[in-house]
Image (cartoon, rainbow, N blue to C red; front, side, top):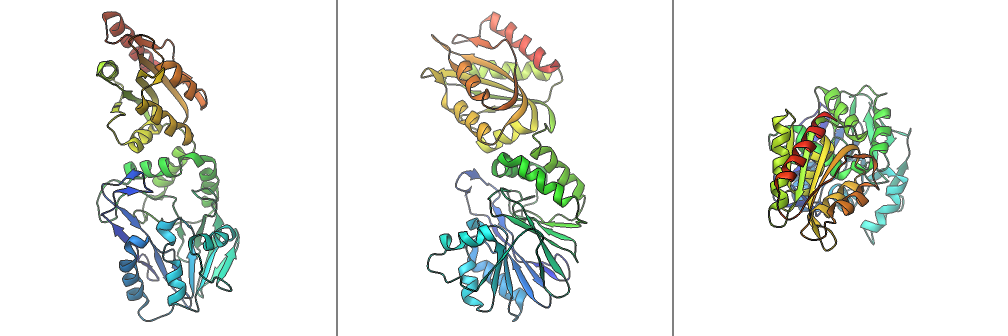
Length: 385
């Protein structure tokens, strides 16, 4: 596939992988994007995961059509992009790796016994690599989402090779809207590092970008302001949608009944609602929904003098991904000593700019008429706050 007359796509599609990074479900697979720039000198932009190494080699050699590449630009050292580096060095003895200084130090960690002497060119922000008719300008992007990451800009074709930024789950052979899986990808992979993403966006705003080539997902050629705008929202932790995520963790159904009543009451008041059972849902999707919505209602059973583990795990994920700037309501349930709200509050208190609504609704085992009234009042509060 040609991206431009001189830039070829040599990425591969992995449709049999079940978990990305060993934890995120990818029902529609993942793409390992790689690119080939054909100029007076030839540059490969990243490789692929070893899972698809044979297919990647086939695409690379066909695209080269007998020519020898001069450079391998390694923007990111994560194994899904770098696994084939040693093989490339062995196959092409004259090739040099162009990468950041931090990545250069990482290379021996991944490829023990590989001789990198004289084969690595370390670049920093502001450096440029001439390929003949064009230059690649390098821009540091630390913690988007590893510390060694760089992006590079083809000044002639106005193409930004964006590393993991602007990526998404799903193979590019699967036709689906970009936003949902890109949101889930961003918030779970890069969500903690909003400040660093904001810094990269400010740098990118100074470039006349016409095409974005990420390391996962489709190449973006049209309406770039839409994608960049979403990244600005996500990385500044602003809500994307006015509405409420009702997330519940229930042992025997009593807490679930209260949560679903709250969801129904909110809908009756015209509020957009997503309700998720934390014991059964995809946790990465629940996290993405929490960041998308402006408010969250957490409903949980007490358990072992704390909170039912599915809720604890959810709160832990929110915390490590830097969840902030949200209004949160709490419903707890307990048969003899309700402790869920106290435990949830203790985790929420460690997050930034979290407004916890009062009062907390406390249920003893099963909803009574007074609990229904309290949930109705909570729905009204959530709808108007």
